[in-house]
Image 1: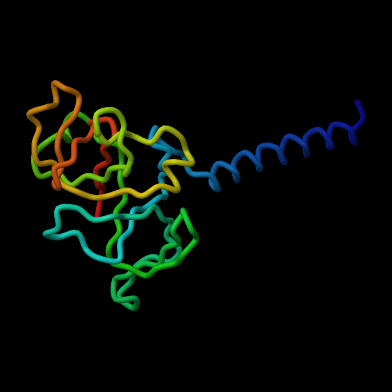
Image 2: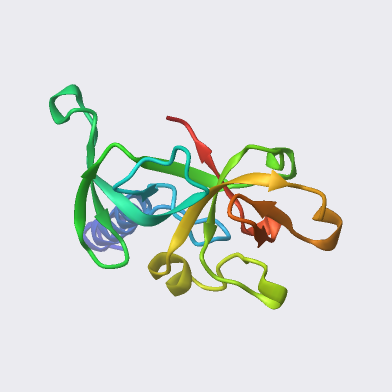
Length: 166
């Protein structure tokens, strides 16, 4: 094999490895709810004493700083609109240990059988549908496959997301 062919093969391998490394950095991993590691849920209003509020899936464009009055800039995934807000949360899927009274959770606004809110069934649904934030208020029906969140909504435990950080 000539030096030219060996050099050509080496360059192709280096290019492929570079593409794999770059594409891995560009595309965040997603969990079973189709939520990516760099996704946030945002709201114009804070979640304080309300039973629940709607939140929207978004990507952070500009991190919060003292100069931005601790607001970060986001682009909503569903419609591309942009918003500066202090009200944003990163989440992960809830585990059995997270199922406690008063835990703040985020849930897809979609009901399945018997009016129980369920996890997203596909990526499009997860990334374009509404979500809401609420608190776990009743665990007594876990044996039936659901719990209750503020507002009186029944939710499948597999549909819950909990807030991390911040």
